[in-house]
Every structure is written in C-alpha cells, then in structure tokens.
Image (tube, rainbow, N blue to C red; front, side, top):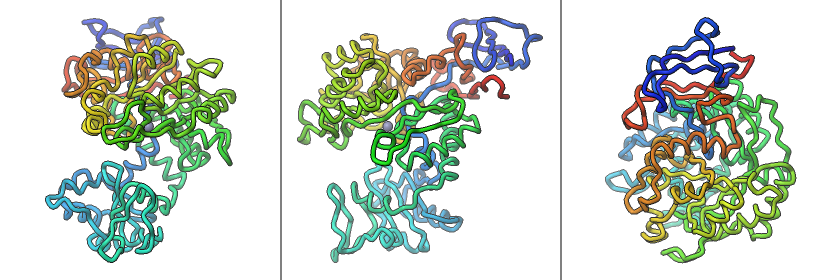
Length: 498
Ligand SMILES: [Zn+2]
C-alpha cells in the first residue's frame, strides 16, 4: 500500500513538497502519482509529526468526558439546572459530574443535600470539585456509603456537617474516598466507550500516541480488555504503564495483549516515589514554606527492591518523583539495575546540578509537564517561595545536559492541549526563570520526537523514513502563527489494514 501526499508544507522548505508512505511508514524511496495506490492532496496544509503525550491518563480522561460537565456553570442555580437535566435523562448507575466550583458562585458557599436532593430524585450523585480536592454528594450517596452523624472524619479529610453533626453533602480531601469507594466500578463496555472518547479527544488535539500512566486502578484484567476493544477502532496509538501492585502485588497478574503492538502495547510498570508540591507531599531536601519536607512513599531499600523486581521480569519502570529528595532515592534504585537507561522518571520538578549530572550519567529519560506552571504556578510559589519556585522544571538545563526529555500533559489533571504545554515551555509564566525557556521548535520536538523516544517508540515523532506516517495538518505554520488551526490528524494504518 503506497500513499502519496502532495502539496505539503513543512518548516524544512519554502516550497510545497511531496511525502511518500508505504505500508503506513514514511519512505525515502519516491514514487510517482501513477505508482501510488492513493494520492492525498493536502492543499498546501502545514504538516507536523503527530504529537505524542508520553504521560497522561487515558481511561480517567474518558470517564471525565462521560461525566456531566459543570465548567460552564457560574451560579448554584445553573449547576442545579444542569444536574436536574442530566438526572431526567439518566439511565442507570450513579450520576457523576466534574468541574464543580463553588468559588465561582456569588455567595461562594458549597451546595448541600437540601438543594441537591430535590433535583437528583434519589439517583446517587457526586459533583467533583475542579481542584479534585473536594466533592458534594446527595443523600442517596451518604446513605449507600454509610456516612452519618456518627461517622468520624477520616485522617486528612472532613465531612462537612450541620451544628448537630449531620452530614451536609460536601466531603473534603480524604473524606471524598468514602463516597467514591462506594460507587460501582464501571463495566468493561463503559470503560471501552470512555477510552474511545478520550482517544477521539486526544486525536482532536493532534495527538497520535498516548501513554496511560497508571493502568489497572479499576482492575487490570477489565482495563486491559477495555483497551483491547478500543484499539480495534484504531483511533490513537496507546501505551500502557501498569501500576506495580497490579502485576507484582498480591493477586497480581502478568498482562497479556494480543493487539498489534503499534496500536497497543505495555510500555512498563509505574511506581510512585512521592506526592505533589501543592499538597506538600513531594519529598524535598529543604522545608516547605508551610513546614515539613514531604514524604517518601517507600523506604529507599523498598523502592529499590520494587524496581529490581520489575526490571528482572523484563519491564521498563517509570517512577513518579517530584521532589529532589525523592529523585535522589529514585536514581539510587535505578542505578542498581543492569541497564539504568531503560527506565524513566516522571515529573522531576525539583532538580539541582548534582541530580542533573546523575540523570545524564545514567542515560535516563525524564518526562515533564510544562502546562503545570500555567495551571498550578500560584500553588508552587505559595509552597516553595518565589526563589525555589522560579527554578522548577529546568528544561533548558536538562536539554543542554543532553538528557532525553519527553513533554506531556498529565491529562485529565490539566486541559492538556499540547500547544498550551509548548507555549508555556517556550515562555515560562511570570516568576519562573526565563533562562530555562526552550525555543518553540525545541518544545515541539519535546512533544513529538522527545516524547516518542521516552515511550521507547523509535519509529515515531518525525516525518522521516521508517517512521509511522502519523501527522497533523494545520492551515498555516503553527510555530509562527498561534492562531493556526488544526485541520486534521492522521494515524497511519499498518500493512494489511485499510
Ligand atoms: Zn500522571
């Protein structure tokens, strides 16, 4: 199968060019229109390799897309009307809503069961706060979850109550878990639909391959079945990074996928070494402004043991590590494996010269999420103070050290348009060291070739011979023109497929 793309513009030449693909991959062996099975006229469209999101959460993103979206609601009445409409057409199960935010209401106070119950008509309903740190539930949820006046607040959480101790509906921080744990797990069919919704959304953003970075939290077997079914639709290439416990923990299982690996394959195993800066749980060498140094999730030796287990079973490991104290223990663990450069570290937000030198020496790839500076910058400054916050995510220094960097979003934690990440990497927000800016071209490379290599996909991320012919088409050069429009995203079929 030979496809010829004509009237293509790229940053390489000023004149339109022709690109050739054979069996889904770019080829340097040119053929004529007559020799082609298909000729596609891109009409002067500007072509970039498909974006690769090397760290996001595909199924959770899709489940959010299936939920009721409250982001357009600015008053409690609007929220209640939206929920009432959703309840009226709701078929079965729980009603889940996202992007609830009471701080937008003129009065600023949370909704309560007194307002929510009349519109939800007994359907268990959870409104998740846009921050992810709170939720409001109705009486049906309180009842099913057994949350009553006598229920104690869980550690690190609060059940908001009336003066008599009766729950009012809002659940803060860890108290949310009481409600979510009582909610039914989505069925495989529902997860497949969610994954497809996420993949379609990713593709609409120009993304042709995504790495799901915590596969298995809803049951590994069921999730793998759902990903396999979704892969049949050939929307977006997908890699899975499976939670360590789901493979090596009690009742763990070896994943098996009988899908063409270019569409769906296991990338590796995910471990968490620490928490997050906003919550003060990323493990730091120096104290937070608000006190404490965060925490390591595992003792260093335990982490090293887990890495060894996965490594000797043949898996790559990707480790969440945000604080500098955490990253030091992560590098210790990776250093003990026979081939450290196979593994990868996620986020690495707080670094110093010594850590950067160690990462370089070990040949490890790191993945960063520039959009975080845009969305959470205020929290970083509050937690770390201006000086330390300014040095977060030193992309220029990492690049100069020759460290392989994959850029990514961490969707659905942020909206996740790659251009938001790219433009943030190239022009860090006020208060963040401008010396660490990348050029736009470098940032695009981080979101294409860099991210593909971080995923272990040598054959993605450039318009070069041997690589998959996955690409995006814009009406004009999106690097020069922020208003350029994405007009199409192509993901190549494999040999033998249409
Ligand atoms: Zn993540």
